[in-house]
Length: 108
Length: 121
Image (cartoon, rainbow over all chains, first blue to last red):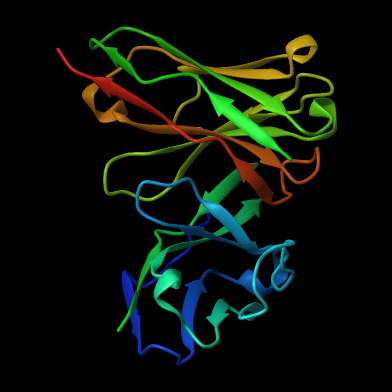
């Protein structure tokens, strides 16, 4: 079955740019969605279809997807961006939603 | 605004079943798929399955096939997830979530608040 690989944790200095990667075989051929989850809360969609932002999501959040890696970029990271971030795709062959293992973002 | 309000926390014994409900509002229920995702303590998100709310067709994760049943009551704009033969490993927060479109491959754009299910003897 299709698998998505994410680093367990990423750290970024306050105000700097955070990059969170999601690896998968030819993931560039798939639509990738990203979710933010803060402790004790439900996930929130922050990027859909690789690089689209839902209404209400700050422009600081952006996404890209090519080859075997999709990337979520947070520019000017703020303390409020500390959260777990999950990538997600649809696997057509298995007809399953697939989530990555999640990356914990720490803002220093 | 879109809201998905789930039923309250449950404590179940091993071998029992649990049924979690999800009441939707703020959008046309039958225009969007409904997914169920669970999260064990300290773990990642795990997709369980989804339902086409217009025709009732379901897709289930192979991991839960035969143990999970997802249904809807379109007259009440509500969805339900029933999980049987519970084990301690089923202790988790269970989320219902709205698909951006009806097709399963679309993003999931709104989530319920979660329902904690604890399985313990």
